[in-house]
Amino acid sequence: MISLPPSERDLHAYVDHQLLESDRRLLETWLATHPDVAAQVQEWQRDAQHLRASLSGALQQTTNPDLDPALIRQRIKHQSRRHLATAAVLLITVSLGGLGGWQARQMSQGTVLPMTDAMQAYRLFAQNGILPADYRVQGNGDMQTWLDRYFTQANRLPDLAQAGFKAVSGRLLTTEQGAAAMVLYEDPQGRRISFYIRPPGPQNKLLPRGSSQADGLQAQYWSGGGYNYAMVSPSDEPTTQMLKHTLKF
Image (tube, rainbow, N blue to C red):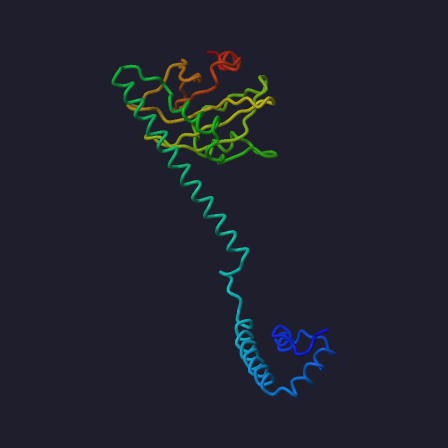
């Protein structure tokens, strides 16, 4: 219940139709005997009417879909993902550039290790997980079918089921000679190995069966069907011996 004389808050509540009916009648009776205050209240009422009229036109306008809050949040989310992907690609570029410099130094020393890019791909995607996979095996999905889209004449993926490993995801890559790919295998304990396929290197060089080690990783490599291949795993795990036996090295 309001008190008399009314406060400015009470007068604004009256203008905004926020008073109880009993308080409204009491205030109108008081205003009838105070014309100066009544004139001020009438001016506020006119301003409020003009404001309502202006807003009513805006509220009746067709909704602008570009201003929809859900779409705005979605655009911000997509932009954040795009910025993250751009940063990741830059990081990969720098990493591969560093690898290229390291390989150039090795070439000058006559000690180039075969399939060093396969080991670098393992570090980037299997160990660090910088970017998500291009393809993940789900339900009845088949990794071989996915790989055949890009490498039609390549050898079949190694079957490592007896060793407890299955192909779970794939990532497309690129080299100076053309498209490459890495297929990631995992076992129930979460251990990871990778299969890497790429076109032959400079001078169309195919590889004899062999292996190389660098920075805690080992690559078992070979060639066939016009491509070079490598299986990469940590060199300090029993997985290395399993791969040698499975791939008949």
